Length: 155
Image (tube, rainbow, N blue to C red; front, side):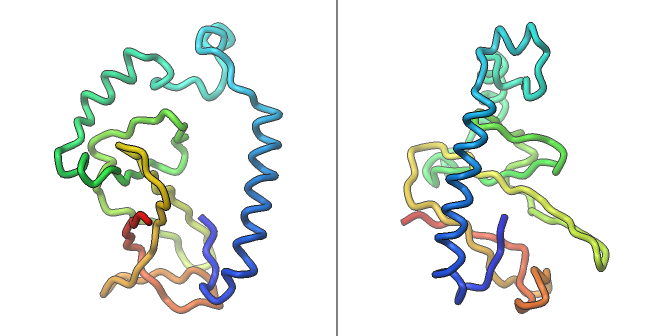
């Protein structure tokens, strides 16, 4: 996540878009996906449970999105920072809807990832951080204290 003051959006967003395009092109050129069978034989890093269609089906059955979640169209989830999240990741039920928190002592940097699992086609998705009474996090010396609560909106 890259955080910047809203008044700097006109400058920051084109730069971030260019950076994303560059990273995506370099990554895809260097790391083209392999078929699951070859990845298993080579025991490649990045081989994960959801690559197996049966395991993926089992994970979806365990997740079992509620009617309300299905109507909402997405699930927010988090995983430990050392666990990788892939495009085909199916989160655990325990990781969905839980409070997303991180802690770092003064002078340290702590990161955390919030994933969004779309349950239907979505366009114009935006994750926003909002103020929450009693819970603050300083993002940088230039910004005012803000909270670690979030909302998702679609355009």
